[in-house]
Length: 598
Image (cartoon, rainbow, N blue to C red; front, side, top):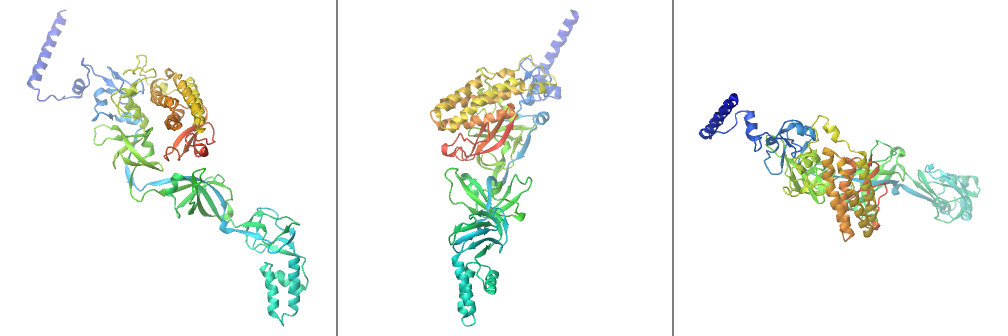
């Protein structure tokens, strides 16, 4: 007891001395050591040091250790909250590494748009010829009787019996007797046979033998592959009748289909590279020499023609190809941002910008206005400056941290309202995790596991979504209203308590968007309103299927004509195109982008 009194007296003297020192030397209150800095700046109202996680700022505890959600080492709260702005996220080197954050400078360049177009090889019409009957008669024999055969110029292809031809031979033989006295008449009779394209050797043979041939051979005037045979043996033909169609395939045309939105980028002289599954790894090329002046009404596309050299005749007519065209969208330099940096939610576009000249890596979300897509980039209309660094990898992890800290993010447009901290039942999420969660070193592995039961519940949501997609494709508003109601109901039945830690937080990020847009579709009074909300619903559900690895095979499809020409995605159970955004006459507009299989 005496010792206790003694210690209390010493403590009283110490506290008195500190107070007096503060009064006398309050002009310099800077801490001298790291311990002083922690004691002064990292304490709560009771003087205790508060530790938090730079990736999950809702974690706050009195002892150092690891984050119960991600396993990162906790840091004093001041280091995690010393932002220079209300929406800034300050991170440590360790958190940067764990989140795998990468940045890319915003730059100016002449944007090049990459157009991908399906196409088909066809015969070059400028190198296609017809073999016709120059005289009426009856076909006696066909020496070329199989489509695809190759014929040389001068090769006989058929023989014909013709009374007119017999009369012309007799006339030739009669004039030949008096060619010395009347050479003009002889040359006239000979010229008639030449105009019927009888070979000179055949005409000379008739004159030398002084015999009329009952049937005369017809020869091909060109070399090429027989594309069509339009005659049979013993068939009577009229003058000018088509007998054979022959194509020289040393040069072919490739006809591509381009979407209406790509029209402004197409012009003669541009080089298109194309590939075909028949020759994996081999690339062909040719220059555009014709752009269709008319848009096809049903597909809203136009034809683009390329002439390509066909060495070895390896490109076959009707062969399917896929073309790639790099087209400059502007002759002046434009500000561009990588596609991977952009977070979309409806009409909003959000990027995370790295703030310069800071002691610790600092990032802030920023809403920007985008222009046309050019390959893997977008043109920036407003919101960014040249040289600023944007996050191109780890954006979703940063966005999750921003949401949890109630800062500007993809899903939180009004920071400070706490709107994104509302759980499934409408209750505000607690700032601290349940005490039953232990921050051991295996926490990251444990929380990343998504139970099979949760995946099956999400699969039911996807099934209802596919019914909704087909209803919108049929423009059946009553059916789409009913289907959207079932989607919303299925979402309510998903048990989020099956998820732990980060997976739980990820689902919370998706749920509000999915629920909101499914309810908008159910309450909409027009098919246009439903399709607009379905576009947002689809973009988030595609992320869900990929992120949580929902079992099954799905196809991510895209139509550039949807969303007023900006394009839109949707999910399908097969490769057939059944566009949910456009009217019936354009239900097949679109293409399969990705196969998703888990």
